[in-house]
Image 1 (cartoon, helix red, strand yellow):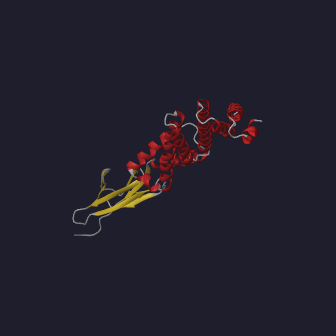
Image 2: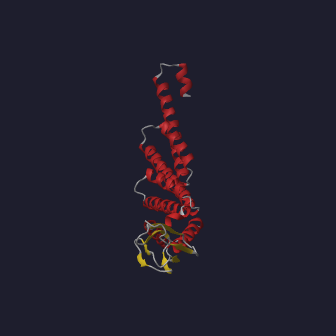
Image 3: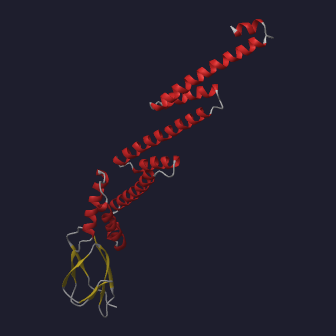
Amino acid sequence: DYAAAAELDPHSEEARDGHLRLRTTLADRQFQTMMAQGLEALHRGDLDDARQRLEEAQRFRPEAVEVTQALAMVEEAELRAAMDRLRDDAVAHERAERWQDAWNAYRRILAMDPAIEFAQAGKERSEEMIRLEKLTNHYLANPALLIGRTTREDAKQLVERLATLAGLGPRLQDAANRLAEQVRLANTPLRVTLRSDTQTEVAVYRVAQLGTFDTHGLELLPGVYTVVGHRNGYRDVRLELRLEPGQTDASLTVVCTEPI
């Protein structure tokens, strides 16, 4: 026993050399065992065990290139596994219409590797869905916006965009359907009855000069209109006509009654 001999005779070179060779041989065996076990764990996908075994091997041979290479393979596999988990999470979030959570998952993947195409596409898709859902809910929460000409056209374009998207989730599809109906009503002309006294010149500002009449019917889109009445010798009148989408009974009397 070289170790016992070295203890009995510390000055014996043969004992010391033998003890050193024995320790080196044992270390080599342990290194090879840990390497083999680490690589086997890596191949079967047990990354935690693989890392533990290979780091143990590295303690026996810190400079061994094969350990460094094997640990790099573990790190790459860990990165792929993390990306796969995040991808699964992102897909689940999309199916549940949790667009912000999906965006966060794709962003985390891109932080690991900015070149991952599916993550870039998913992030862009999530961004658009977040924007579309916010806009849709904004119009639904503020239906008065649809009586404005510009906002009505914007809402119409939003409905058309939503209609082009395949596989909308049930929540956004329901919101899109409700907005489409509101936009349809906002773009449906309403029958309006104006009454006067046959003496007052009536005009709907920026729409038409109607002249004098007793009763006049016309069709107008939902919105807010200014109706003006003029009669010589009388003070002009300016009235607001507000037409709501889906309104069924719209009428206004326009008569100049105050002499000047």
